[in-house]
Length: 67
Image (cartoon, rainbow, N blue to C red; front, side):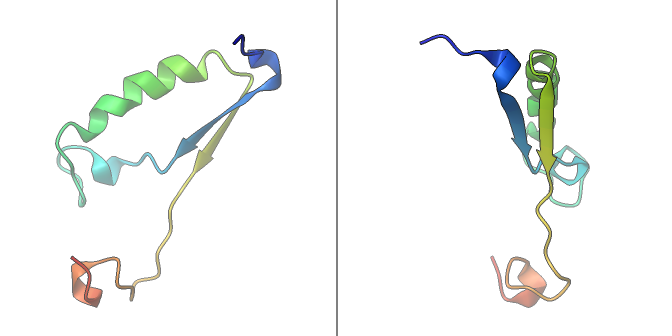
């Protein structure tokens, strides 16, 4: 299968500093995805970045009953 990148968009979901080492929600090697995203982004005319957003009081966090 051949992909026509001139008609495609790259969608990058929820890459943020908080997931990098030293961040509030750091994961091991969380920053390793950034160079890959940067390399891929050069191949696309359109790059769409998304951000996950939670209100301060939510079960997504320990303080709100999450894990």
